Length: 330
Ligand code: AHM
Ligand code: MG
Image 1 (cartoon, rainbow, N blue to C red):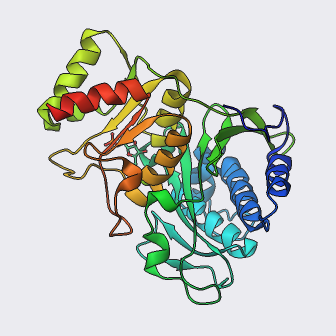
Image 2: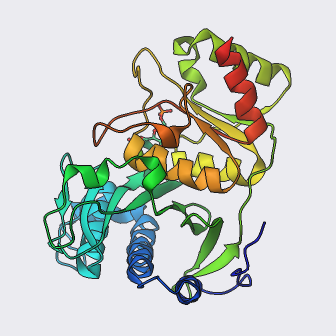
């Protein structure tokens, strides 16, 4: 169902966010500003990603970038960019990043929000010109404004997210996010420097025929999952796996499919990280009508204990995930 605030395709992200903000009398605009800060950082990452192939070249030549930093790996650059954008923005009091073990304090203790982020996911694809992404998750802090943020601000659980999104640096760059009122996608127009609403109110198909997993791990999967995948092959479903979570998720969301990262012997809890990979995509997926499970429970219901904990992840078109869970239950 499209909500009454829907704006036409073609509006900019800034206008969309502003419109949403004025529509809610209680909104103070801080979350809006935070989303704009993230969008700004992602434009800078877009620029870096699109010249990724030149990084070693310029680095090798001892060339420094505009900020006077020597060239670093792209995921490190992305991490620095996001931290800087959120420090400058002032709305987030702390960050948790895949790139850092501990909490990153922004120094803005009056900020009401904390952000968990994977600045550049799909690291194995960076060097080979394949799609990569950013994933983010936003919570309202539970500790008092004005104090130093604490662990519990990040360990609230997926249901407490106030916003979540991803940026896919693919054949186009697209930013997709939710604040709990549906999911919208904004494609980046490089010539304008603007994200433009291109995918309003995204809904997953009820069913699909694409399955996405690292089938090289098949022997390590639980036999019930092996049986499900055998059934997918038997029905001649399409196998698609990029190995970039954001790209695999985005394709399946639009086309109808299932994404699986089960427990393996190598990674008994799966590979993906709960706080900045599974939770945010699960929030978006739920808003788009997908079903999301760790095999035992809805991913958003998992009670977190560690910043960097992992979880198995099964997510996608509701009928496909239900069928998988039926296999897993028998
Ligand atoms: P990363 O955080 O090191 O980039 O790893 C996460 C990535 C996901 O994007 C992707 O879904 C998964 O790892 C692929 O793992 P595998 O190579 O085991 O199939
Ligand atoms: Mg990652």
